Image (cartoon, rainbow, N blue to C red; front, side):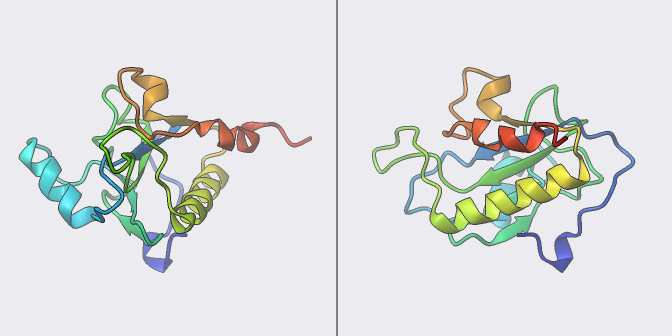
Length: 151
């Protein structure tokens, strides 16, 4: 759940997608915005490409400012928000849904919060846009109920 430091407000840029990701790391590896920023800078990016990172213990860290486009999904960054959980590989390095119970709670809370602020935004997994990716290694369809009309 975003803390007071992660206030989510309406932005001047249009948001039409909330894109979910994983770090593609094994369960024993716990990283955060600091490490991801180092990885992304090594690729030539300015900073962490995600707006939010959810650590193994469920802690939500803010990466990029929401007012700034991300660097998390080619051709979709300008009008999206990127949310990434740490994990996505099993112990053998194979794609797997490795979300901890704490990460599931935090991810659910942040997706619901973002959807409340950006109700017209589609909730998608990185693999829904780029089928060559396994990321986020779970079926984002579990959030489709948020996008149904509540009449």
